[in-house]
Amino acid sequence: MKPFDCCELVRHAYSQIGSAELGYIPQAISCAVKALNEIAADETVPQAQREKAAFACANLLISDFED
Image (cartoon, rainbow, N blue to C red; front, side, top):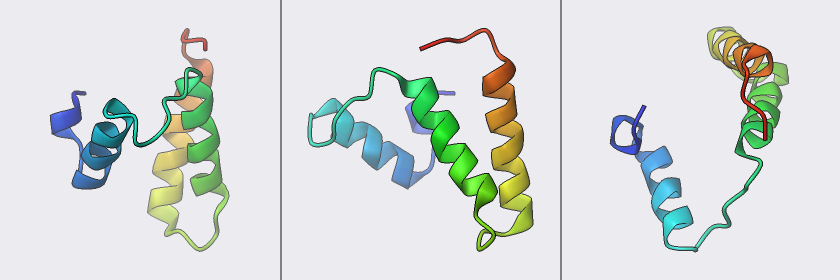
């Protein structure tokens, strides 16, 4: 997936990281796993969204990618 394929909020954060307004995190996969886990655990988030986050998080944990 490319940045232009993402939603406006993601594109905005991408732009801010690229311009050094936000800090780049070298351990991006760990950051993503933590964020997805928080979404999956948040009972105020709709169940369908929690399940998507859990699925994505589990796939990252199983993948061959390492930080």
